[in-house]
Image (cartoon, rainbow, N blue to C red; front, side, top):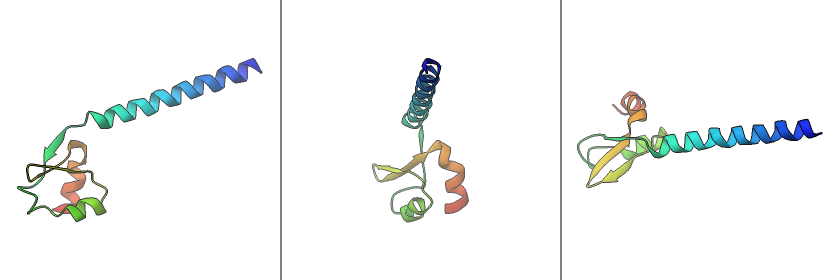
Length: 75
C-alpha cells in the first residue's frame, strides 16, 4: 500500500512539473510582426487556424512558433 502511494505521489509531481514547463514556455514566447498594419491583415483567418495574435499600435503580432503555420495558411 505504501509503495502505491509513493508511485502515485511521484506521478503527480511529474505531471505538475510537465504542466509548469509548458505553461512557462508559452509565457516567454517571442512575438513577431505579421503584415504592415491591422488594416492589411485578415485576423479572421488567424482565428480560424487557431493562431494566437495580439494587436499593438495598429500592428498585428503573432508568436514566433506560429510563423510557419501563418505563412502556410494566410499567404
